[in-house]
Length: 399
Image (cartoon, rainbow, N blue to C red; front, side, top):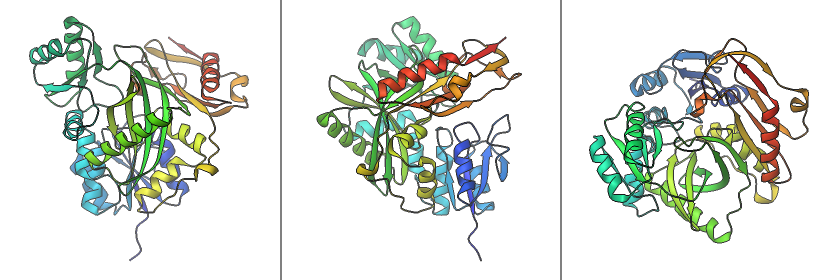
């Protein structure tokens, strides 16, 4: 019997859309799993399955029914437990169920990092606001309050005072299915990230990037820039820390999104995601290193051994990305993208997520985006400046 050519994609949002298209371009049938809704990946699917990606058993049953060869996602954490369960049950290549559960639960993740003596902020998790507040008072404000099972910066807030703590706790509680809330010491430094390409248990590529985030209390990533020069010693420290984190969690055969903070020259781990980052990071890395990141993700999940370009073959093209965002709730009445933006010689990618008539929300977290732009330049700072300038020229009339 011929091996079925079905590849399952978990999620149908804007970050999964390029992955769905790549699966089809590579000659496979795209089986897309998502709740029903106005998601751009649904009409692109060869087969759409209206299943909640957090329903592990339903996703697993669908994977068996459709005899899939691989399961993939990018840009979202909530479906990772289902992805790991499918990999384990069907003997597929990729993140295990154990590692997926750890990465999808910030409390378990922090426990794994701390147990292995890796740099991560002092923390504890609680079921009551009162106990959490007592801990915050003991370690000293400011602190970060986090929903342990959310993604896209939902339910994550900085609290500078006890009154702000109560607000942050309420926001975290509203964004979680768990009774447990994480409280950790606020680290003051420079936030950055890396995309780690892991084949087997080895890190075969590590791509640092600068992060642009919104101002507290909700610090949401809205853009990235490459390259990020850390210096030789800091680079070695980051490589060692990342390798230790991936080993502690047990991640194999995956592209991982890792958030860090540089504090007085030392890197500290914030979070480890067992999937490629969102906010255009696939495009950032691909533009910088000269390969198709989506194809790599699919090939890795298929059990192949994809290779990255050699360092000498990488174009090392500086670039930056930025989300397009609305500043109010309402209905989109008009979108205007000047020809000067569409035809700009440094434009790498431009996507407008909305059309007139769509309802949008004031930007707070990643899914509130209304588009993105990626540009290249002579260096990362110039790329960021060009990106911001071009984004300002794009106008959205929201009523």
